[in-house]
Length: 149
Image 1 (cartoon, helix red, strand yellow):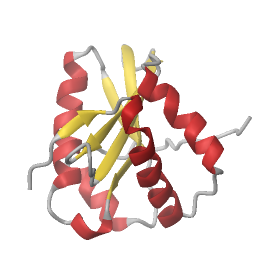
Image 2 (cartoon, one colour):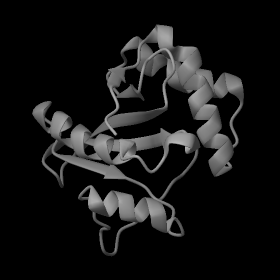
Image 3 (tube, helix red, strand yellow):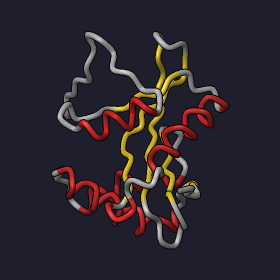
């Protein structure tokens, strides 16, 4: 299946919030609606730290992907993290996430991005297979560590 990808803009905020809330509920991520809104709105307003894309028709999106940007000495410059990728359960298994994971790195590299990273639950074998098919590899002896501020 081919899904259109639309750069999310302020007018898409409510639709994106609903999708993010669904993903967070599915993953057990606890976040208030206000915190969710405060995290998403700057991306749609054009801050330089990341972007959000809607998958499918913008009026009735079937998923989203959020990409954040950083800088890496190891990888030689601008790098990106696929912070979240989500496809509604009713349309999963149709190649939509695969399409995004194959198209986005190509587009990002044209914008100067040197590496794209993502994080996956060690127990989520389905996601790991998807990411491996899209060319992502685990890094031996490395793991994301977090300190919440």
